[in-house]
Image 1 (cartoon, rainbow, N blue to C red):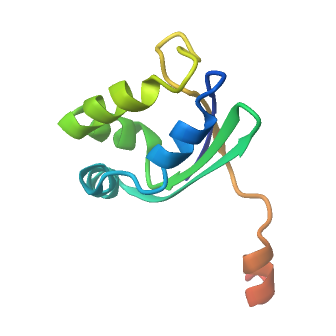
Image 2 (spheres, rainbow, N blue to C red):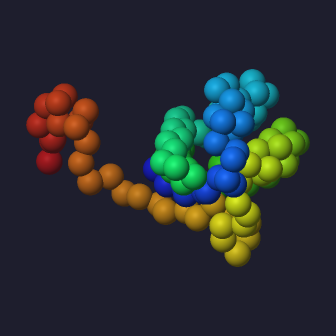
Length: 113
């Protein structure tokens, strides 16, 4: 499953946010692995942040992370850089996306019906 998230930085927090994400804490990384995250990319354009998360089940991932003490610490810390909230529950707006086409898949050969 692929989930797209959009968040927005507070003015003047671009460099600090980048420093904080140069390498997330190992404890947070391990918690994300346990929660089923297989990949997570973040891109920035101006103050806008675009996240693409790959996991087996996003609802399960969120539920698992909600039980991790490191997640609360991280969200409090990283939240200082972000405009909040972005939805009615205080979570980044989520878009669940179904795959349509992949360059890498096509490069590997024809699809099998």
